[in-house]
Image (tube, rainbow, N blue to C red; front, side, top):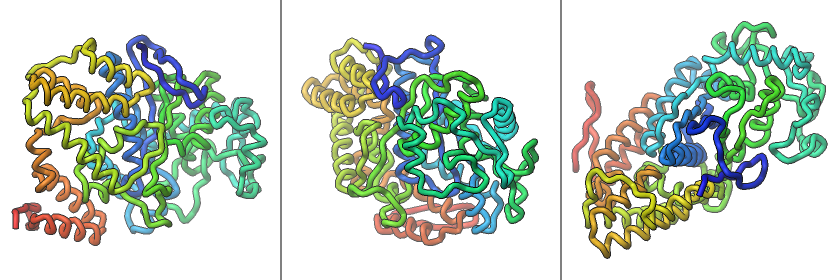
Length: 458
Protein backbone atom coordinates (compact mmCIF):
# COMPACT_ATOMS: atom_id res chain seq x y z
CA UNK A 1 0.00 0.00 0.00
CA UNK A 2 1.39 3.39 -1.05
CA UNK A 3 1.62 6.29 1.38
CA UNK A 4 -1.50 8.47 1.47
CA UNK A 5 -1.60 11.92 3.06
CA UNK A 6 -4.54 14.13 3.99
CA UNK A 7 -4.06 17.32 1.98
CA UNK A 8 -5.56 20.34 3.74
CA UNK A 9 -5.83 22.17 0.43
CA UNK A 10 -7.73 19.43 -1.40
CA UNK A 11 -9.54 18.41 1.82
CA UNK A 12 -9.05 14.73 1.12
CA UNK A 13 -6.55 11.92 1.51
CA UNK A 14 -4.32 11.68 -1.55
CA UNK A 15 -1.71 9.18 -2.66
CA UNK A 16 1.73 10.65 -2.11
CA UNK A 17 4.24 10.97 -4.93
CA UNK A 18 7.19 13.36 -4.55
CA UNK A 19 8.32 15.64 -7.32
CA UNK A 20 11.64 13.82 -7.46
CA UNK A 21 11.50 10.05 -7.14
CA UNK A 22 12.95 8.93 -3.83
CA UNK A 23 13.44 12.44 -2.45
CA UNK A 24 10.95 14.36 -0.29
CA UNK A 25 11.30 18.10 0.30
CA UNK A 26 9.36 19.29 3.35
CA UNK A 27 8.97 22.69 5.00
CA UNK A 28 7.42 23.16 8.45
CA UNK A 29 6.84 26.49 10.14
CA UNK A 30 8.91 26.68 13.30
CA UNK A 31 9.00 28.80 16.41
CA UNK A 32 9.02 32.54 17.03
CA UNK A 33 11.75 32.61 19.65
CA UNK A 34 10.74 35.20 22.22
CA UNK A 35 9.82 32.72 24.98
CA UNK A 36 10.11 29.08 26.00
CA UNK A 37 8.38 26.46 23.85
CA UNK A 38 4.93 25.37 25.04
CA UNK A 39 2.83 22.24 24.63
CA UNK A 40 1.51 23.37 21.25
CA UNK A 41 5.07 23.59 19.97
CA UNK A 42 5.77 20.11 21.34
CA UNK A 43 2.74 18.74 19.47
CA UNK A 44 3.94 20.18 16.15
CA UNK A 45 7.60 19.23 16.63
CA UNK A 46 6.76 15.62 17.49
CA UNK A 47 4.09 15.28 14.77
CA UNK A 48 6.43 16.28 11.96
CA UNK A 49 9.33 14.42 13.51
CA UNK A 50 7.21 11.27 13.13
CA UNK A 51 6.44 12.27 9.54
CA UNK A 52 10.10 12.60 8.61
CA UNK A 53 10.99 9.39 10.48
CA UNK A 54 8.37 7.42 8.56
CA UNK A 55 9.42 8.90 5.23
CA UNK A 56 13.00 7.82 5.95
CA UNK A 57 11.84 4.38 7.10
CA UNK A 58 9.96 4.12 3.80
CA UNK A 59 13.19 4.59 1.87
CA UNK A 60 12.96 8.28 1.00
CA UNK A 61 15.75 10.79 1.26
CA UNK A 62 14.24 13.72 3.20
CA UNK A 63 15.27 17.34 3.05
CA UNK A 64 13.46 18.81 6.02
CA UNK A 65 13.42 22.56 6.65
CA UNK A 66 12.01 24.03 9.86
CA UNK A 67 12.55 27.76 10.18
CA UNK A 68 13.18 30.00 13.15
CA UNK A 69 11.53 33.41 13.30
CA UNK A 70 14.09 35.54 15.10
CA UNK A 71 12.70 38.99 14.26
CA UNK A 72 9.13 39.91 15.13
CA UNK A 73 7.08 42.46 17.10
CA UNK A 74 6.93 40.18 20.16
CA UNK A 75 10.67 39.55 20.04
CA UNK A 76 11.42 43.28 19.91
CA UNK A 77 9.01 44.02 22.76
CA UNK A 78 10.39 41.22 24.95
CA UNK A 79 14.02 42.20 24.35
CA UNK A 80 13.30 45.84 25.20
CA UNK A 81 11.35 44.82 28.31
CA UNK A 82 14.23 42.56 29.40
CA UNK A 83 16.84 45.23 28.74
CA UNK A 84 18.78 42.90 26.44
CA UNK A 85 19.64 42.80 22.75
CA UNK A 86 17.42 40.97 20.30
CA UNK A 87 20.30 38.63 19.47
CA UNK A 88 20.89 37.79 23.13
CA UNK A 89 17.20 36.97 23.64
CA UNK A 90 16.80 34.87 20.51
CA UNK A 91 20.09 33.00 21.02
CA UNK A 92 19.00 32.05 24.53
CA UNK A 93 15.55 30.94 23.42
CA UNK A 94 16.93 28.94 20.47
CA UNK A 95 19.24 27.08 22.84
CA UNK A 96 16.30 26.38 25.15
CA UNK A 97 14.22 25.19 22.18
CA UNK A 98 16.96 22.78 21.15
CA UNK A 99 17.20 21.42 24.69
CA UNK A 100 13.44 20.82 24.77
CA UNK A 101 13.37 19.23 21.31
CA UNK A 102 16.33 16.98 22.14
CA UNK A 103 14.69 15.87 25.38
CA UNK A 104 11.55 14.89 23.43
CA UNK A 105 13.58 12.84 20.95
CA UNK A 106 12.93 15.23 18.05
CA UNK A 107 15.55 14.86 15.35
CA UNK A 108 17.11 18.08 14.07
CA UNK A 109 15.86 19.17 10.64
CA UNK A 110 18.19 19.16 7.64
CA UNK A 111 18.14 22.96 7.63
CA UNK A 112 17.04 25.35 10.37
CA UNK A 113 17.18 28.79 8.73
CA UNK A 114 16.86 31.95 10.80
CA UNK A 115 14.81 34.73 9.28
CA UNK A 116 17.48 37.36 9.88
CA UNK A 117 19.86 35.46 7.58
CA UNK A 118 17.46 35.67 4.63
CA UNK A 119 16.47 39.35 4.56
CA UNK A 120 18.03 39.94 1.09
CA UNK A 121 15.95 37.08 -0.34
CA UNK A 122 12.83 38.57 1.27
CA UNK A 123 13.56 41.96 -0.27
CA UNK A 124 14.04 40.36 -3.69
CA UNK A 125 10.72 38.53 -3.37
CA UNK A 126 8.91 41.75 -2.42
CA UNK A 127 10.44 43.46 -5.46
CA UNK A 128 9.10 40.64 -7.67
CA UNK A 129 5.63 41.12 -6.22
CA UNK A 130 5.87 44.86 -6.76
CA UNK A 131 6.89 44.34 -10.40
CA UNK A 132 3.86 42.09 -10.90
CA UNK A 133 1.48 44.63 -9.42
CA UNK A 134 0.77 42.55 -6.33
CA UNK A 135 2.54 44.83 -3.84
CA UNK A 136 2.11 48.52 -3.15
CA UNK A 137 3.35 51.12 -0.73
CA UNK A 138 0.82 52.21 1.87
CA UNK A 139 0.42 55.77 3.02
CA UNK A 140 2.33 54.97 6.18
CA UNK A 141 5.31 53.69 4.20
CA UNK A 142 4.79 49.94 4.67
CA UNK A 143 4.90 47.64 1.65
CA UNK A 144 1.60 45.75 1.46
CA UNK A 145 0.28 42.77 -0.51
CA UNK A 146 -2.83 43.45 -2.59
CA UNK A 147 -4.96 40.40 -1.84
CA UNK A 148 -7.68 41.08 -4.42
CA UNK A 149 -5.12 41.08 -7.22
CA UNK A 150 -4.31 37.42 -6.52
CA UNK A 151 -7.22 35.42 -7.98
CA UNK A 152 -6.73 32.30 -5.82
CA UNK A 153 -6.68 33.93 -2.39
CA UNK A 154 -8.73 31.89 0.09
CA UNK A 155 -8.22 28.49 -1.54
CA UNK A 156 -6.47 26.98 1.50
CA UNK A 157 -8.99 28.28 4.04
CA UNK A 158 -11.84 27.46 1.66
CA UNK A 159 -13.40 30.89 1.99
CA UNK A 160 -14.17 33.60 -0.50
CA UNK A 161 -12.73 37.08 -0.15
CA UNK A 162 -16.15 38.40 0.84
CA UNK A 163 -16.47 35.76 3.58
CA UNK A 164 -12.97 36.54 4.85
CA UNK A 165 -13.65 40.27 4.84
CA UNK A 166 -16.92 39.74 6.73
CA UNK A 167 -14.86 38.04 9.42
CA UNK A 168 -12.52 40.99 9.80
CA UNK A 169 -12.91 42.51 13.25
CA UNK A 170 -10.33 45.23 12.77
CA UNK A 171 -11.22 48.48 11.04
CA UNK A 172 -9.54 49.21 7.71
CA UNK A 173 -6.19 50.90 8.31
CA UNK A 174 -5.77 54.16 6.47
CA UNK A 175 -2.75 52.91 4.55
CA UNK A 176 -4.46 49.75 3.29
CA UNK A 177 -6.47 49.53 0.09
CA UNK A 178 -8.36 46.55 1.51
CA UNK A 179 -8.67 45.26 5.10
CA UNK A 180 -7.34 41.85 4.02
CA UNK A 181 -4.11 43.28 2.60
CA UNK A 182 -1.11 42.34 4.71
CA UNK A 183 2.35 43.69 5.43
CA UNK A 184 5.37 42.59 3.43
CA UNK A 185 7.84 45.17 4.74
CA UNK A 186 7.40 47.28 7.87
CA UNK A 187 8.82 50.77 7.98
CA UNK A 188 11.22 51.17 10.88
CA UNK A 189 10.17 53.15 13.94
CA UNK A 190 12.37 55.58 15.79
CA UNK A 191 11.85 53.82 19.13
CA UNK A 192 12.89 50.38 17.80
CA UNK A 193 16.44 49.06 18.26
CA UNK A 194 18.78 49.60 15.28
CA UNK A 195 19.33 45.81 15.08
CA UNK A 196 15.64 45.46 14.19
CA UNK A 197 16.03 47.48 10.98
CA UNK A 198 17.62 46.82 7.59
CA UNK A 199 18.30 49.06 4.62
CA UNK A 200 16.12 48.22 1.63
CA UNK A 201 14.72 49.63 -1.63
CA UNK A 202 11.49 50.19 0.33
CA UNK A 203 13.13 52.20 3.08
CA UNK A 204 14.71 51.25 6.37
CA UNK A 205 12.66 48.63 8.16
CA UNK A 206 12.14 44.90 8.58
CA UNK A 207 10.22 42.07 6.92
CA UNK A 208 6.68 41.06 7.74
CA UNK A 209 6.15 37.61 9.23
CA UNK A 210 4.57 35.93 6.19
CA UNK A 211 7.27 36.90 3.67
CA UNK A 212 9.90 35.18 5.82
CA UNK A 213 8.65 31.65 5.16
CA UNK A 214 8.08 32.26 1.45
CA UNK A 215 11.67 33.43 1.03
CA UNK A 216 13.29 30.72 3.15
CA UNK A 217 11.33 27.82 1.65
CA UNK A 218 12.12 28.97 -1.88
CA UNK A 219 15.82 29.48 -1.10
CA UNK A 220 16.25 26.01 0.40
CA UNK A 221 13.66 23.85 -1.38
CA UNK A 222 12.84 25.63 -4.64
CA UNK A 223 9.72 27.39 -5.90
CA UNK A 224 7.70 24.14 -5.63
CA UNK A 225 8.27 21.42 -3.04
CA UNK A 226 6.42 18.39 -1.71
CA UNK A 227 5.04 19.00 1.77
CA UNK A 228 4.31 22.17 3.73
CA UNK A 229 3.30 21.64 7.34
CA UNK A 230 2.45 23.47 10.53
CA UNK A 231 -0.15 23.86 13.23
CA UNK A 232 -3.82 24.24 12.33
CA UNK A 233 -3.70 27.80 13.69
CA UNK A 234 -1.33 28.73 10.84
CA UNK A 235 -3.66 27.65 8.03
CA UNK A 236 -5.14 31.15 7.94
CA UNK A 237 -3.80 33.71 7.52
CA UNK A 238 -0.12 32.64 7.56
CA UNK A 239 -0.19 29.77 5.09
CA UNK A 240 -2.83 31.44 2.95
CA UNK A 241 -0.55 34.46 2.71
CA UNK A 242 2.47 32.30 1.91
CA UNK A 243 0.58 30.87 -1.05
CA UNK A 244 -0.37 34.34 -2.25
CA UNK A 245 3.22 35.59 -2.01
CA UNK A 246 5.04 32.57 -3.44
CA UNK A 247 2.59 31.65 -6.18
CA UNK A 248 1.99 35.30 -7.00
CA UNK A 249 5.71 35.87 -7.50
CA UNK A 250 6.68 32.62 -9.24
CA UNK A 251 3.47 31.51 -10.96
CA UNK A 252 3.98 27.97 -9.65
CA UNK A 253 2.35 25.78 -7.02
CA UNK A 254 4.07 26.36 -3.66
CA UNK A 255 3.47 22.97 -2.02
CA UNK A 256 1.89 19.86 -3.46
CA UNK A 257 0.59 18.64 -0.07
CA UNK A 258 -0.44 20.74 2.91
CA UNK A 259 -0.42 19.13 6.36
CA UNK A 260 -1.74 20.66 9.60
CA UNK A 261 -1.54 19.16 13.07
CA UNK A 262 -4.48 19.59 15.45
CA UNK A 263 -4.86 21.92 18.41
CA UNK A 264 -3.94 21.04 21.97
CA UNK A 265 -6.37 21.62 24.83
CA UNK A 266 -5.83 21.46 28.57
CA UNK A 267 -8.55 19.66 30.52
CA UNK A 268 -10.87 20.14 27.49
CA UNK A 269 -10.26 23.90 27.31
CA UNK A 270 -8.10 25.81 24.88
CA UNK A 271 -4.65 26.41 26.31
CA UNK A 272 -4.36 30.09 27.19
CA UNK A 273 -2.31 32.24 29.54
CA UNK A 274 -5.46 34.17 30.42
CA UNK A 275 -7.13 30.94 31.62
CA UNK A 276 -4.12 30.01 33.70
CA UNK A 277 -3.76 26.65 31.94
CA UNK A 278 -0.70 27.50 29.86
CA UNK A 279 2.18 25.02 30.11
CA UNK A 280 5.68 25.14 28.67
CA UNK A 281 7.43 21.92 27.72
CA UNK A 282 9.62 22.42 30.78
CA UNK A 283 6.59 22.70 33.02
CA UNK A 284 5.45 19.27 31.87
CA UNK A 285 8.94 17.73 32.11
CA UNK A 286 9.05 18.70 35.76
CA UNK A 287 6.39 16.07 36.36
CA UNK A 288 6.78 13.50 33.58
CA UNK A 289 9.73 11.98 31.77
CA UNK A 290 10.21 13.09 28.18
CA UNK A 291 9.42 9.74 26.56
CA UNK A 292 6.06 9.59 28.33
CA UNK A 293 5.25 13.04 26.94
CA UNK A 294 6.30 11.94 23.45
CA UNK A 295 4.24 8.75 23.71
CA UNK A 296 1.23 10.77 24.88
CA UNK A 297 1.49 12.86 21.68
CA UNK A 298 2.32 10.01 19.30
CA UNK A 299 -0.54 7.73 20.27
CA UNK A 300 -3.05 10.35 19.06
CA UNK A 301 -3.46 11.06 15.35
CA UNK A 302 -1.63 14.23 14.36
CA UNK A 303 -4.77 15.86 12.92
CA UNK A 304 -6.96 15.17 15.96
CA UNK A 305 -7.35 17.58 18.87
CA UNK A 306 -5.13 16.51 21.76
CA UNK A 307 -6.34 16.98 25.32
CA UNK A 308 -3.66 17.44 27.96
CA UNK A 309 -4.66 16.20 31.39
CA UNK A 310 -2.65 14.66 34.21
CA UNK A 311 -4.79 11.52 34.05
CA UNK A 312 -3.90 11.12 30.37
CA UNK A 313 -0.18 11.48 31.08
CA UNK A 314 -0.45 8.97 33.92
CA UNK A 315 -2.18 6.55 31.55
CA UNK A 316 0.52 7.13 28.92
CA UNK A 317 3.24 6.36 31.45
CA UNK A 318 1.49 3.15 32.51
CA UNK A 319 1.01 2.07 28.88
CA UNK A 320 4.63 2.78 27.98
CA UNK A 321 5.71 0.81 31.03
CA UNK A 322 3.87 -2.25 29.64
CA UNK A 323 5.95 -2.08 26.46
CA UNK A 324 9.21 -1.67 28.34
CA UNK A 325 8.29 -4.54 30.66
CA UNK A 326 8.10 -6.85 27.63
CA UNK A 327 11.50 -5.63 26.41
CA UNK A 328 12.95 -6.12 29.88
CA UNK A 329 11.61 -9.67 30.16
CA UNK A 330 13.03 -10.74 26.78
CA UNK A 331 16.23 -8.92 25.71
CA UNK A 332 15.99 -7.96 22.01
CA UNK A 333 18.02 -9.74 19.36
CA UNK A 334 21.09 -7.72 18.34
CA UNK A 335 21.56 -6.52 14.76
CA UNK A 336 17.88 -6.86 13.92
CA UNK A 337 16.45 -5.56 10.62
CA UNK A 338 12.68 -5.12 10.21
CA UNK A 339 11.00 -7.61 7.88
CA UNK A 340 7.98 -5.67 6.65
CA UNK A 341 6.32 -8.94 5.60
CA UNK A 342 5.97 -9.93 9.24
CA UNK A 343 2.21 -9.72 10.02
CA UNK A 344 2.61 -7.14 12.80
CA UNK A 345 5.17 -5.09 10.85
CA UNK A 346 2.89 -5.22 7.80
CA UNK A 347 -0.09 -3.92 9.84
CA UNK A 348 2.14 -1.22 11.35
CA UNK A 349 3.20 -0.15 7.86
CA UNK A 350 -0.39 -0.09 6.61
CA UNK A 351 -1.36 2.15 9.52
CA UNK A 352 1.49 4.59 8.95
CA UNK A 353 0.88 4.67 5.20
CA UNK A 354 -2.69 5.79 5.82
CA UNK A 355 -1.95 9.43 6.69
CA UNK A 356 0.57 8.55 9.40
CA UNK A 357 -1.94 6.59 11.48
CA UNK A 358 0.02 6.44 14.71
CA UNK A 359 -2.91 5.29 16.95
CA UNK A 360 -3.24 2.10 14.90
CA UNK A 361 0.55 1.74 14.68
CA UNK A 362 0.88 2.03 18.47
CA UNK A 363 -1.85 -0.61 18.83
CA UNK A 364 0.41 -2.96 16.88
CA UNK A 365 3.18 -2.36 19.42
CA UNK A 366 0.89 -3.66 22.16
CA UNK A 367 -0.05 -6.66 20.03
CA UNK A 368 3.63 -7.39 19.65
CA UNK A 369 4.33 -6.90 23.37
CA UNK A 370 1.70 -9.53 24.12
CA UNK A 371 3.35 -11.83 21.59
CA UNK A 372 6.75 -11.27 23.24
CA UNK A 373 5.27 -12.27 26.59
CA UNK A 374 3.88 -15.46 25.00
CA UNK A 375 6.71 -16.47 22.66
CA UNK A 376 9.69 -15.27 24.72
CA UNK A 377 11.51 -14.87 21.40
CA UNK A 378 14.36 -12.34 21.12
CA UNK A 379 13.35 -11.68 17.50
CA UNK A 380 9.85 -10.58 18.54
CA UNK A 381 11.34 -8.33 21.22
CA UNK A 382 13.75 -6.87 18.66
CA UNK A 383 10.86 -6.15 16.29
CA UNK A 384 9.01 -4.36 19.09
CA UNK A 385 12.01 -2.16 19.78
CA UNK A 386 12.65 -1.51 16.08
CA UNK A 387 9.05 -0.52 15.31
CA UNK A 388 9.02 1.66 18.42
CA UNK A 389 12.17 3.32 17.13
CA UNK A 390 10.36 4.30 13.93
CA UNK A 391 8.15 6.45 16.18
CA UNK A 392 11.06 7.64 18.32
CA UNK A 393 10.08 5.36 21.22
CA UNK A 394 11.42 2.38 23.20
CA UNK A 395 15.12 3.16 22.70
CA UNK A 396 15.93 3.59 26.39
CA UNK A 397 17.38 0.76 28.48
CA UNK A 398 14.28 -1.02 29.86
CA UNK A 399 15.63 -1.19 33.41
CA UNK A 400 16.51 2.51 33.29
CA UNK A 401 13.00 3.43 32.17
CA UNK A 402 11.22 1.16 34.62
CA UNK A 403 13.37 2.27 37.57
CA UNK A 404 12.78 5.91 36.67
CA UNK A 405 9.14 5.31 37.49
CA UNK A 406 10.20 4.77 41.10
CA UNK A 407 13.17 7.07 41.37
CA UNK A 408 14.76 9.55 38.99
CA UNK A 409 17.17 8.40 36.30
CA UNK A 410 20.48 10.24 35.91
CA UNK A 411 19.60 11.52 32.43
CA UNK A 412 16.41 13.09 33.75
CA UNK A 413 18.26 14.69 36.66
CA UNK A 414 20.81 16.19 34.27
CA UNK A 415 17.99 17.50 32.04
CA UNK A 416 16.44 19.22 35.04
CA UNK A 417 19.82 20.68 36.06
CA UNK A 418 20.20 22.08 32.52
CA UNK A 419 16.67 23.47 32.66
CA UNK A 420 17.47 25.14 35.97
CA UNK A 421 20.66 26.64 34.51
CA UNK A 422 18.69 28.00 31.57
CA UNK A 423 16.11 29.48 33.94
CA UNK A 424 18.86 31.17 35.97
CA UNK A 425 20.42 32.54 32.77
CA UNK A 426 17.02 33.95 31.84
CA UNK A 427 16.81 35.50 35.32
CA UNK A 428 13.72 33.39 35.99
CA UNK A 429 14.77 32.64 39.54
CA UNK A 430 11.31 31.47 40.57
CA UNK A 431 11.52 28.70 37.95
CA UNK A 432 15.08 27.83 39.02
CA UNK A 433 13.97 27.55 42.65
CA UNK A 434 10.97 25.45 41.62
CA UNK A 435 13.24 22.94 39.84
CA UNK A 436 15.54 22.75 42.87
CA UNK A 437 12.51 22.08 45.10
CA UNK A 438 11.10 19.54 42.63
CA UNK A 439 14.31 17.52 42.78
CA UNK A 440 14.61 17.95 46.53
CA UNK A 441 11.10 16.56 46.96
CA UNK A 442 12.30 13.45 45.13
CA UNK A 443 15.42 13.04 47.24
CA UNK A 444 17.92 14.83 44.99
CA UNK A 445 20.06 17.58 46.54
CA UNK A 446 21.77 20.08 44.21
CA UNK A 447 25.11 21.64 45.06
CA UNK A 448 26.23 24.74 43.16
CA UNK A 449 29.90 25.66 42.76
CA UNK A 450 31.96 27.88 40.41
CA UNK A 451 32.65 24.80 38.28
CA UNK A 452 28.98 23.85 37.90
CA UNK A 453 26.13 22.03 39.62
CA UNK A 454 26.41 18.53 41.04
CA UNK A 455 23.84 16.36 42.78
CA UNK A 456 23.58 13.66 45.37
CA UNK A 457 20.82 11.64 46.95
CA UNK A 458 19.56 12.93 50.28
